[in-house]
Image 1: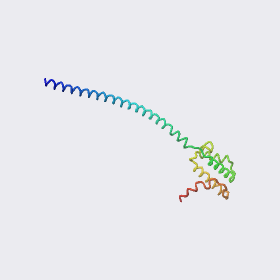
Image 2: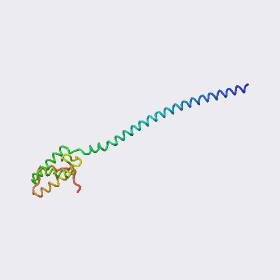
Image 3: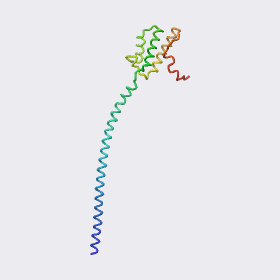
Image 4: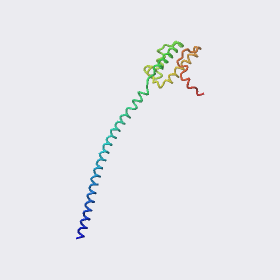
Length: 157
């Protein structure tokens, strides 16, 4: 009879162990299901984010193009107008001819459509023509809007 008691006690220990294993397995399955659900949710969010990133990446060049091509600022436009008048007064060339040459050089429909980023090129364009006009007439220009432009940067030589 002692053997039977020992057998049943061992069987009871085994059944408790098996019950613990099944509880652990059920808990592990529940945790795995929860982790898979979180993974699927995160994967969906990543796909949405990738789609949004793709949309943003597609729009950025367009935005940069629009931002990068800001038209001439009002002070720069006023300087161009004064420069055209100066050249007209010195050379007697009609305003329209000077504006037309400027538009053709910078390939725009109107001078105010020149990108503000190209302002240094505009200054160089005017300086070259004003200096040529001064040599031709032998008189220094008064009220030259481009005479001191960028002078505060100094010289390389």
